[in-house]
Image (cartoon, rainbow, N blue to C red; front, side):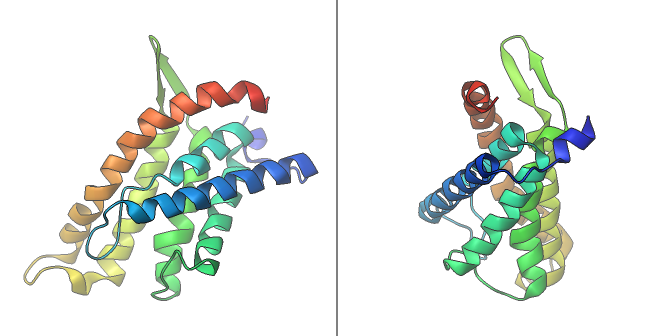
Length: 183
């Protein structure tokens, strides 16, 4: 089962669908720009919804490619800010790439409600990546006398938790409507 989820076939159809998901993610990246952000960066991210849907609808391999591709395109288009190679990895490439891993954890149906545990899993991984960046790369932003690790845990939870809630609502709704068109 895992082999099929990570498998990527380079057909014209698949590349066009992947490009579509990347384009949707980039458009949603601009929506992120109008949402108020925290002082040192970080905002509720609506763009990750498209990457998660790419993972669910096409497979985790495509989802990861979508996330990495979008991270690179965000720099090309000037959406992302460069603070060094480790920041690129921990703030952009890794958090967006892991969002494509949603199909690795099974969705559970409770009554009429679908619980996408893959969304919870990838948002936890995304949080860990942002936490590592904040705690180790941007430790100087912690208030005087506050441990940078504690500060990063709190700071990143402020925007990752609402993003998780948003994704837990929107992704299952969109997935249930799109899955028949993709299969």
